[in-house]
Length: 206
Image 1 (cartoon, rainbow, N blue to C red):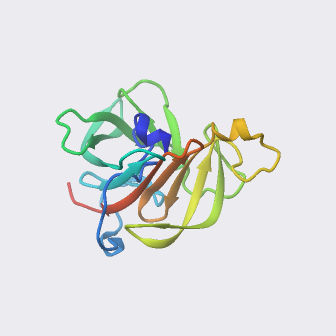
Image 2 (tube, rainbow, N blue to C red):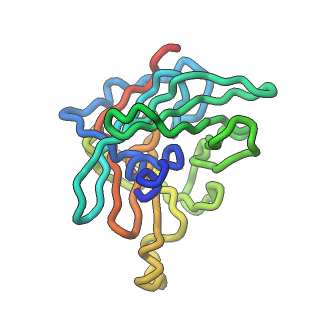
């Protein structure tokens, strides 16, 4: 979840991406296939898609974070989605650009055209698959305010459950959680930071 706290790495989501606001009731019914052919099932890209998270860390007050896809930018034949991340009503959002790779993976960059960027999630991650510099763990169940219990893919920098990892190294762990049809639903780190999805809207028209 440090990811979201830092810059959401544009989407480090909320806590991992999730951390950002509290939704009183599940919003799964709002999910629908995006009308734009962007992203993949684990990170739908369509202008108007919005994810709100509640974020916090041990001993600190919770805060809200919202990520919204606001525009499409075409550059050298490639389509980018402008992602704006705001803390509460901050008038100056953190901007990132998301795009889809040739194999359906979703990339994030802070400037259009500046190289391939960071791989956020692949199109069909399986346990043990490489996701950029991270590793996928599929089939895990977790609970988030916006969805209740949901099956997710965890993408992490190293094995969270590996008993061989020393305690001091565990503090450097970070993971993001993606749900099919929704996108990033949570993010967490080894220092106790966490973001969880509280409401979302996927499939909005441009």
